[in-house]
Image 1 (tube, rainbow, N blue to C red):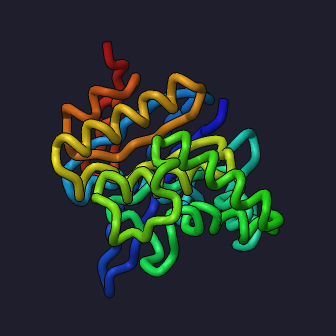
Image 2 (spheres, rainbow, N blue to C red):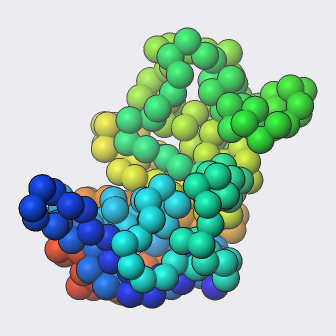
Image 3 (tube, one colour):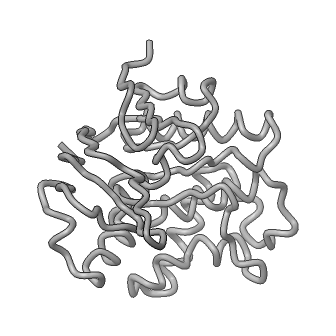
Amino acid sequence: MLIVINNVSKVYPMGSVEVRALDGVSLSIERGAFVSIMGRSGSGKTTLLDVIGCLSRPTSGEYLLNGQSVQALSDEQRAIVRNRSIGFIFQTFHLLPRQTALMNVALPLFYNGVAQDERHQRAEEALQQVELGHRIHHLPRELSGGQQQRVAIARALVNRPEMILADEPTGNLDSKSGAEIIDLLKALHRQGQTIILVTHDIGIARQAERRIVLEDGVIVEDSEER
């Protein structure tokens, strides 16, 4: 099992009040799965994704990634796990505006100490994988929103991660570009990639194999899509 979460809660202090973003969540996700996480604003879906992505520590409970307790890791060790094992895709792309598509994609490899020639080769391969091999030397401002998100997906893939976490990846795109991004994620899943997708769109959520619905920090539905 790739991910095992047992009775995880996440509490944020807000002055004299505590906000319980997650409240005793338990789930497991197999390697190679395609899972969507749904919920209204404030339901805890992004908090859950942050815990899975080692961006946030749970207040209580247990998170095992590949059988290893994540909360037992130091901040530095968690950063290494994030960089080597997890690819992130965000709604707002987070591309460096003055760097080409190639350089944006190669950036995670730089932090991993990969030599320049290999960085560029692997970044170009990742851009080819998302059908942007002809745009590798373009700056973000020279690309459409859909193309910028493809660059972000290539960046998420370049370290050959064990899973991709996508937080509202179509939120800033028109319907045609959004559908193309979902088709790309489905193609990556068919190739064996583990994908966990946060969305508020039921139509997008139903593209996954499994749908988890959160409400007030609690899982209220966990179903297989047909």
